[in-house]
Length: 304
Image (cartoon, rainbow, N blue to C red; front, side):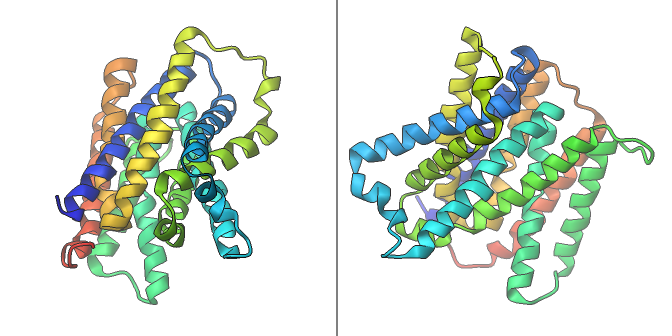
């Protein structure tokens, strides 16, 4: 199997797991009365303990190697930025957007990240966007307009808070997709994910203090938490972040469209979330945008 095919399968698999997790998160918020400030700290902490515990047993020296300040101080800084500003903030903002809207809306807003990645690459390369890249930006803007307004120029179909949280979430995706290149060249992706989750879990526990909220999940709620931890955190991030180095962030963003598709289908069929023609048109614009942004990569040599 070539690296390109393997990378595509890994990123699509990870994205589909995120879609399943997002739908489960919507269920927990709407049917189990959970709050994102309660769920996310626990989700991150459990996932971090699982992955770090695995490496503690498997290779204790490797587990703590990124924090060796004397060997390479930048590794520790990169891990903090990647874990807190990237992965953990993305997790919180993603579930906050789901709580304020739906899993489908949250994932499609998050999938605006390729446009932001494009702008970052243009700045790094000191060039202006090409014509098809400008078209992709316009398509992204049109897609968001259709999804959030349903064609109305005077009202929003989603709350301003959901829109803001989703857009900032897309910015955090850029961080965790582009920042950890040096780290991924030195350490296994699941190990980095473990530290990212653990850092976020500890930080959000201190910020939100979920133990003071008095919420006790039902048996179904506990199962839901396990799903978002094992499927949405451990499996999804490990698959996706293992695929990105094989095919690059731009091509990975195309295959990640499996996430909003999975989330929209499951939330519509299982939770009864509305899905209108405007939503379909918005999804279509975002998908065409992702296709356009994947075109430059097709002329490159296969990833090694």
